[in-house]
Structures are given as C-alpha cells and as structure tokens.
Amino acid sequence: MEILRQVFLVFHLFGFAALLGGVFFQLRGKDPVTGSYMLSSTIVQLVTGAGLIWTRTSLDLPVMHAKMGVKLALDVLMAATALIGMRNKQPWAFYAVGVFTAAAAVVAVMWK
Image: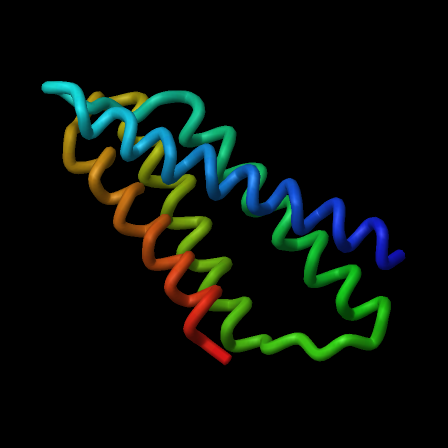
C-alpha cells in the first residue's frame, strides 16, 4: 500500500508540474489560452489527490480533513475554470487556473 501511495504522490506532482509549467510557458506568448492540458492535469490532480487520501487512511496515517477539503475545492475550481476557458476562450480563465494552481501549492506546503 505504501508503494501505491508513493505512485499517487508522484502522479499528483506530475499533474501540478504540468499545470504550473504550462501556465509559465504560455505567459511568454502574447495571447495565453486555456488548453486541454489544463483540464486533463486538473483531473489528474483530483484523482490522485483522492487516491492519496484513500491510501493514507488505509495505512492509518493522519489526514487533515480541513486541508484536504480546501485542496479539493481548489481542484474543483481549477477543473471548472479550465473547462469554461476551453469552451469560451476567455483570457481570465487562464489566469484564474494559474492562481488556483498556485493557491493549491501554497495550501499544500504551508498548511501544517
């Protein structure tokens, strides 16, 4: 079970890296748009985050439910905003996904 938790963690970090890396890459251009990679990365974040909570619970490791609730809310906001941005091609959605991604990273690292 510990190996599965580590696999979930690695893919969770891959999803985060794809999101934030894509945001930084597109900021170099003139017209950043919300791409399908953002939606798929947020889905990876949601699935692997749920998997991490499940494996931590199964291993009797502590889970901070309030923190996980905030991260879940941020991930759902990221997914919904990425979907809206893909359909409507609104620039605000691109920036909102970037802000939600950064906020999720801050919550993950700073909330102890």
